[in-house]
Structures are given as structure tokens and as C-alpha cells.
Amino acid sequence: SGQGKYSYPYILYRTSQSAATDWYSEQLLSASAYDRANKNRLKGHLPMFVQDDDENNVFLKFVDMIGHYFDDIWVFIKAMTDVHDKRDKLTEGIAKDLLKPVAQSLGWSVHDGKDLISLPRYMFGMEQTGSEKPWEYSGTPERDISREIWSRIINNMPYFLKTKGTSRAIKGLISCYGIPSSILRVLEYGGPKLPGQPADFMITRKFTKALKFFGASNNTYVQNDTWEAVTLGDAPTDRHPDTVEFRFRAVTGSNQVLVRRGNDWAIRLKDNGSVDNRGHVSFMLSGSRGYLETSSSNFPVYDGEFWSVMLTRTLSGSGAFLAGD
Image 1 (cartoon, rainbow, N blue to C red):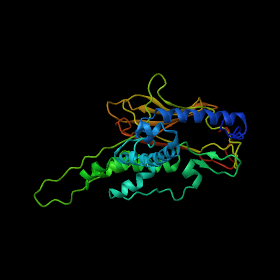
Image 2: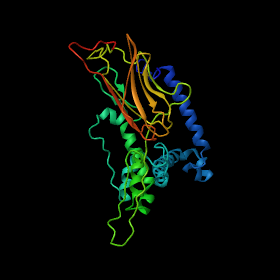
Image 3: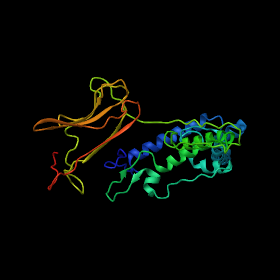
Image 4: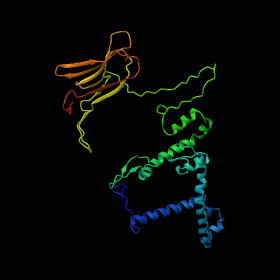
């Protein structure tokens, strides 16, 4: 009985209870029906006069026992060809427990790299925190993550063999670990050139990740309640950040807001009014006398490249910052 949950676990019935006896009777009936209809049953290959003779019951049971013995061997024989079944899923094709010996048979030594991970997290994806119920760290155990990487390596070994010694092999290997080329770049150098030979030009891909803001409100808006007091945990505090830093790329020469916090302050771009790619970065702050603004020098901020901006507040006298500043 039960649902298999932590609060409602499975509880075994007694063998004398009706639920257990009924289940056993149904299983026995189902197994007997399967044996009678099984065309591969070893007993079915005997002559009919041997099967129909009641005096041969002991012999027929012995034949069934021999057939059951070879059934277990047949399961392993049938799975021998699975080593050539290259599928991405760990639950299909080659068994994950055979990935390491298969890789070793192909001349590849694989390693887990999970030596510093606790055993519950490695085997079950659970983190033991000392409480009665363990905390689920991940739905996929670390062991299965390693086996998935091994499976990718085995499936791509023909590619590694054909591209051995080139940057394509290295890129393919790091892709098996889920590392894109935008994070770990592989550069290939062919050695120095002799005098009089033309120079080789190396072409690389450059990646830049950024958010694109468009529409009626094409600016980054910092909400008024973004920095709330942290009242929980070991170190509660109501201090707010003293520095805001970001990167931007403006592709058009126009006045535009980059970042603002409600009606308190804003950082914006101001065009210099000339036909060029230069402009100013200004900071506006609301106060008792309205908005005050300070601008940077004239920079080529509209050149299509990324620029970094950092805004920092400092104390001008004694005291401390207020929580709502």
C-alpha cells in the first residue's frame, strides 16, 4: 500500500493477506498462460508423445529448468550488439555501466572528475543537509552526467580520429562537455613563415552577449523596489549598493536613456549635435532644486562598439548612507 512518497511510503502487505494472495494467483495464472503460448519454450520442441505422457512430468520440469537457465544467458547474448547502438539517451542503446570498458577497448581513458562531490549527490542527485528529509540537488545525478559525456565521446570517436591533431578535434571534444566555442576558443598556429613567404591571416569568431531593448520604453528601468532590505539569513542588512556598472552599445546618434531608477536618477546619452559618432554620457539626479546634471567629455559613444559606465556614490562628510538612498 502507499504512494511511494516520503510522507506516505510503500508498506508491504503480509503474505497471508488477501491482497498478497490474490496478486500471487494472478501472477501465476499470467505466467502459466505465457508459458503455454510461448513458441520458443524448450519443452515445445520435444515430440508430442513425450509431452503427453504423464509419466514424463519430472523430465519435462527438468527441460523447463534447462530452458530457464539458457534464458538468462540469452539476455546477455542479445545485449552484446548494444555496444554498437550509439544513441544519445542513457536509457537506450549501450548500457551506461558498459561505457567505460567500451571506451577503454577503443583506446580512450575516461574519468569521472567528480572526486570532491558527496556520494548522495553523485549517485542520487540528493544533498544531505542533516535534516530528516534529504534535499534534492538535481533531478539528474552527477554520475549520469558523467556517463552522458562519456557516451558523447564514444559516439564522436570516428570524428576525433579523422580530425586528430587539428583544432576541429579539440572543438569537438569540448563540445562533448557542453562548452560552446563562444566561451572556450581554440586557436591554431601553423608556425613561423620563411622569408619571402606570405603571412597567414587567422580568422576568429568574436562573440558578445547582450540584451536588446526596443519599443516604446527602450531603456533599462531599475525599479524603485529593486533594492529591498534583506531581513532573513545570517547577515540581515538594509544597505543598498554604492556602485552601478554596465556596458552599452548605441548604434544611432540620438538622445536616449540608458538606465534610470524611477524619477530619482538616470544615466543617458546626449548627442553633440554634429554629424559624427561622438556624444556625452550624462548623469541626472533629482533633488530639492529639481534635476541636476553632469556630463562626461566628448567621446565616440555612437561608434557601434561597447562602452562601460560606472556610477559610484561616496560620502561627502561624516555619517552614513541612509537605507533609502
